Image (cartoon, rainbow, N blue to C red; front, side, top):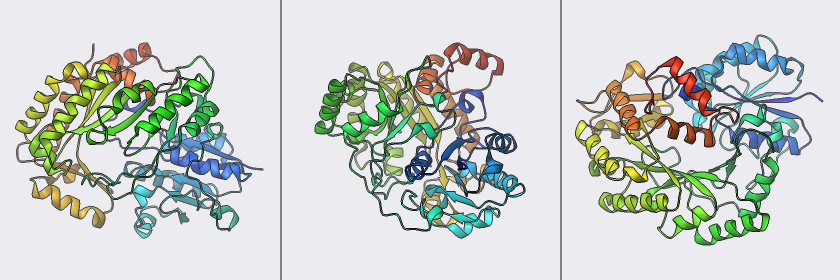
Length: 448
């Protein structure tokens, strides 16, 4: 039986700059691995490959070396973001000029129910799977409807090419529904958290016992809102299994109560990605982050202190938004400085609008009402970038974002955060420092 190839599209363009610190990332497409797991459980032989930052031609040659030309099955490609569109177009052209297998495309945030627009951009594809694919993937192979429940499907990491280098992800819930204007899941309803017993079973199944960096899973959830009951159950399961692995999750400031933090630490959380976004009252209101920004920031203050006291490393996420000025950035900087001892690192980015033009127009209009204008030179299909205000153009905003990050992120902290979740498990800090010294680029961390 020949392999079925599942491909996570790579990127020719990057959001945060084409330097070593970013291009060492190995982002696991756990949604694609989930589809491959479904297919594997049905008796087929799938293999999962990630394009990452490899050129399409080099990646194509890698696929050929792994038997692409021998498969009789469709070739599945997941497009995780609009940054991967041009890469996908080039790869599908290479495939079609060599073999005539059907090419099936997925990636719900890129497709966004606009199949015709995507087909126009990718002329070599044959079929598109829109939305969530677990109940659709087998039909492309068998022609039969699949009504199985895949809500808590454990991922099969043995299907992942180069699996030993990846830090794992465990999907614990889907959806958010909080309504932040910049979020693609603002209208997706939040699902229940995966039972801790299943999380432990999944971790035990994926764990590799080797000499590489310890496996520290990312608990994938757009809105991680653990209850006391859920955390206590996770604590109990860990004790029963004598398995005390460390994990990481992304959280909103307003989604966690103070009494939850010590329980998260006891349950194994060691890193939290905290979506603060801004400490400017004006900017928080513009992005609809909170109706009461003063209360929001007070809550964030207490949350940072509690995480620090409970030995949870906090990476604070900041996003420069429409109407941003030197004044609003100074407000955010002042707030961060006041909490510096509690912050392990800061990641700062600049707002973009993602999607097909007609789907994101209302968001663009909203940004422009707050003083933003489109930066046409740095926008491309699916991604619109902005000059944030009359005094803060796109290029200055990028520089200020890196500057702010550098003020609160050492090289070692940056590496530790990346190594916990994204860098290859065999990639050491000493190797990282050597590569950075050779490249000598503009980074979002302080170079020692």
